[in-house]
Length: 474
Image (cartoon, rainbow, N blue to C red; front, top):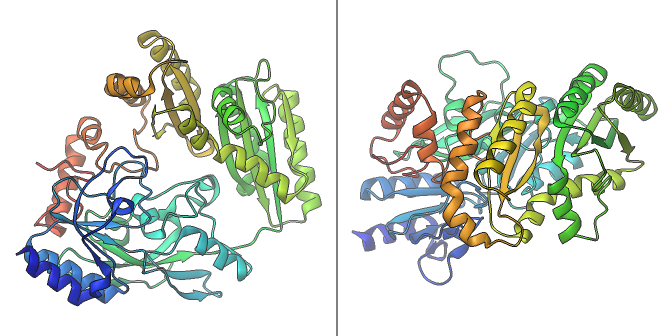
């Protein structure tokens, strides 16, 4: 049966694009190095028709299929298990920009298109594709859609879901659904697009998408502010909303310990207000405006002056050029890399209503320090949309591997129970993957789980699409 399946796959995509030997770690090892699986084959189709042929062959053989884009999942959502019986469906060859409709402000692209390619293609047309992530140079739009990725500009433009107008999907039976209309209004029954966005390849294979584009802003201003508390950061967020309105594009909060890791491991970067007394947090905020830069800067600086008078900002700097703005953003985006340099850590991607984040942080900080003395908290994230990366590092000088091995389950329980206490979610933008299926079972309501399983059974009755991802295999 296996040899017959491989022959069908080679006939579908060409023998050179069915990989069974050699080093396949790029496809079988997850981005964080948490798990390494083993694939029956890695198949690399170049068209929707080839994807459909591969899916049909796997369905006929009863072989599980793992859709994969850039393999940058932070929740082990796109790598095979260790059985050697699953086929990895890599979409990286499907990387074309199919069309740009300037009048409709849309771009239709294939799922394997690198996110940065979308950004650069839009920019060449004098337009903006606003989705921006740290992994934008390697992640793909199909993966972004599969996890409903967020990023740094959600506060204005929304998650990937809000940026998508249409999809092309290969169903688990190998049929092709063409929903690439680009319509902003289409009230003709169930919105199937939303079933597949965020489904992490468990309901079908996204092969192409029609995404929204926007006019380029006339002015873009960036500031870095030192704040006396998380509560003050939330007050600053409220002021920014009132002063800037829809112009508020990004609003990031970063704890001083997180910034100290950047200063320690990347000394070439200048970290504003590093270690400033009385300023446990810094905020990076961005304003994009269609007005003249002079007018936008005047309003932006007035916001910061009022915030200083209000006491929610201790000091602030405004980037004087696009290069300086990029430097500030580079500091923020370097926190995960600096944390990795510090050693293995326990990552969390949580969301809580912004108004409740100060109380959550105070509660969770005290709880973790009491239960596991000496732990170091790397707290940073997209405060503008209530998303924190509330990570936990081993005590100074401790064995990071041993800490991860011995404390991860306990730390996760403490953090996620606290998140539930404050009405939040244990996964804001990274997805569930294989890593958090237990948490989904524990924290999701039985009614919600029942509906999710019913949808999975209806669309994928054989259970072959990314099994063990999101919903635990029963």
